[in-house]
Image 1 (cartoon, helix red, strand yellow):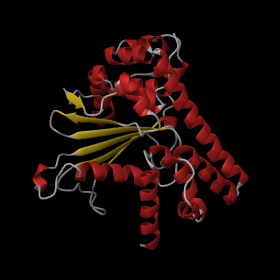
Image 2: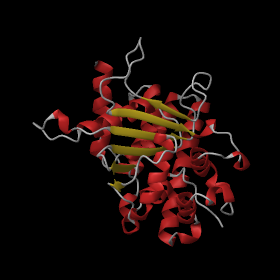
Image 3: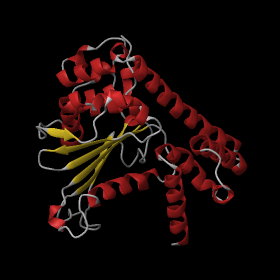
Length: 306
């Protein structure tokens, strides 16, 4: 057996976000959100993976959104590489999802809780302060540490590098799901500790390359190579330490994605500070059009002037 890596967003979407993945996602979320307790009994995947839409998935931002039986919304994202202001992007997506539930004039009591589950293949938080692989954040009073009146917004982070258990050390459902995320690509069989959880066994069967169509494998390989290339380009720019090199990289990516841009956009890109260039290198793959790039630049200008 040869398995694809769930760390690649396309594979993650297929495994956890397909219509047949509901029980898989329920087990995973019960592990990550509720420490393995069977709190979630049912859910609806709002943006399911559809193999007939492979072409439309190219160069788009792939996350998973699900609505639980109590109408809570969960957004799940896999992030392989660190990027500038990623913490702000996570907060933005959480708040945007919460606010977008209401149309203009609708009453606030219609708002349902939102949980953002973010899986990273890098360490986000200081290991000395937060050594655990899973960390959860809610609103609390700063001094007394008392929770806010409602618990509508929650951030949950799963940092894969902090999880160091080996296969023979797996005990809980949490252990097994994190091991699945981190090590599936290195497996050549379904090991007993994972196979004894029906939902993880099903997830491994979905991740088996033998069950992928030619088109799906091509898209998986393309996405995996894209992330590896961009991580390599970012590292190269860091090593070179040349702002001009980073600017050239950004211009190359923009021209590849949207064609040659006009002088005004080119000048705005050239004037970006070094701290924003790496952010744009990663963010550009979330853009679906040149208008998204312009919106990103406009928001950056507002923040700089604010």
